[in-house]
Length: 138
Image 1 (cartoon, rainbow, N blue to C red):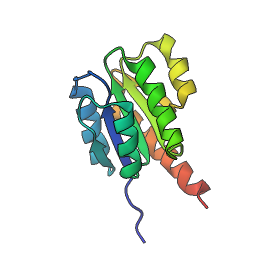
Image 2: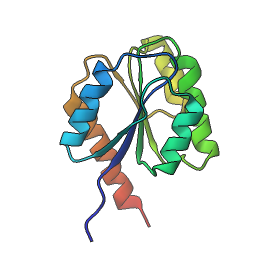
Image 3: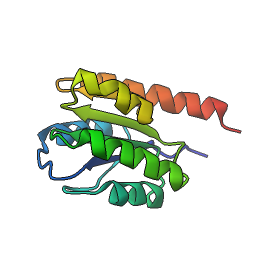
């Protein structure tokens, strides 16, 4: 039986309306064979967590170009844990100052891709994570 493609939810939280970066990432992931769901703009952590659970995604990627990352990213991670989505890979990207990165990682984000990250690096990171999940699944 063929495996389903890796399912990735991409989100923009809060009032952040910059979409160029997340659009580039969405196209790259799709071209790499992943199924991409984009939540659209002005999402709350609650909305994104609910969508991630409803859509049964493997990966949740949050693009942040506004200053709301320290409030929104940990909140989203906590909500996913509470809703049974703690097995999802959480990644963030955009403009996240290096001094904020440890707190974001401590909240549960596996990687922070800063502006200008090579899409091949993002694809490889997700594929490698997914392959590890496949080999450890019961």
